[in-house]
Image (tube, rainbow, N blue to C red; front, side):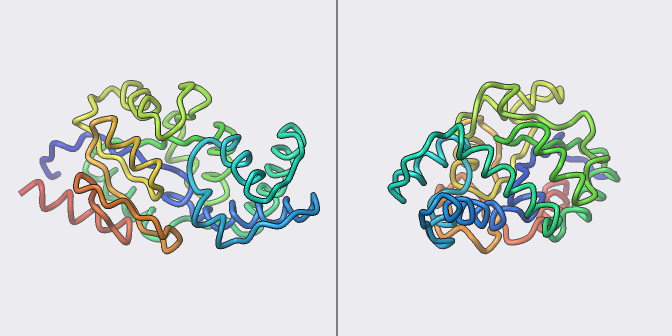
Length: 222
């Protein structure tokens, strides 16, 4: 077993553990069409990834000049998203190998998401990861804090039993990365091919594949 100062890896869910970001944007496009409005997939991928769902939907409605109640739009969006998830959701490449490595090296891990816990659990169940994360799923709805607010990550670290400087955080979105920085955690941004707005902050390390973290942790143990 390697010796490392890293005691816990905190993962974002959508676009980090599960390949869901494009599906989330497709759901947004489809639901807007249901209400007689149009927003492009490219606009969604560029502007509406990460953050609190109510804020995302409000911003998208403003862009598309769609005037309906969030009480109508949000459940319609969640229904469409569940349909797409059940049909197409897949685990992110390298996630299972990375989790296997962390388990072998006795490094703890958890997931911290802006989504409700039932959505986190659904995503992990559909991709075969749920058993690994039982008891280690932290939702913004429980912490009452949504990324980029760092409190969700601090809440997750606290419940895992670690200080912020003992954790690393992995996310694909600029808002998530901002949360990691503000939480005082070493932060890695996963480039999944969708985000044209990669973070340029020097405190953030870019990775193109989750398995890169295996070598990073190994090198730091030497």
